[in-house]
Image 1: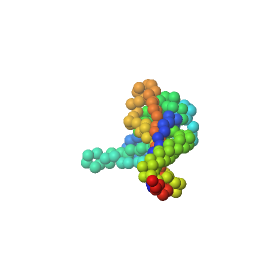
Image 2: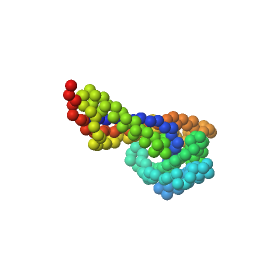
Image 3: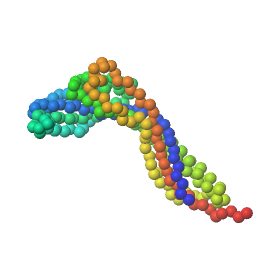
Image 4: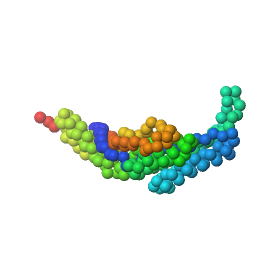
Amino acid sequence: MVVSGTGDVFGEPDTLTADFAVETTASTVGAALDQAVTAATRMRDALIRAGVARADLQTANVSVNSTQDDNGKLTGYTVNQGLTATIRDLGKAGTLMGAAIKAGGDAARLNGVSFAVENSAALLAEARKKAFADARSKAELYARESARPLGRVVKINEADTGWSGPGQRDKMTAAMAAMDSAAPIEPGRQRLSVTVTVEWILGSASTR
């Protein structure tokens, strides 16, 4: 007999990943790159000064594209450069993001944030226990209804494991800097769900 069970647990996020970027446009590639590097460096330095470790910063998604007018004439070049920051002190997250965007000026972008539970081993173990207990409960019910004893487990397959809850937030831009205040951060909580499929042996039907 094959039965599936699901176990859910909840955890409070303890890290935030912010996807920053800079976007600059100039008449030449060199000028656009120089402006992007300057803005990105200022954002990086602002985050480091505020306490973000260098190991929690990563450059990503660097691109250079030409810009054209409606007639297809080349008008300049746009440079996009991403900077991903992992923020471990959620109480300071809003202030950190505001400082970084202010440092980057009009070139700064904040494409979104996501929350995570970094140390989730204990939660995962609890979710697995609940999933197996759910599967066993169903198996015992079916065994009773069929008047057959539930035997040993012969196979277990973890079919699905995943987090749900606070994830990507609405996109924010350099307008945050104009607020001159920290962005409100509400991490909420996340659900960890585990689904297992368990195969049991059923004993011989009882005789009455």
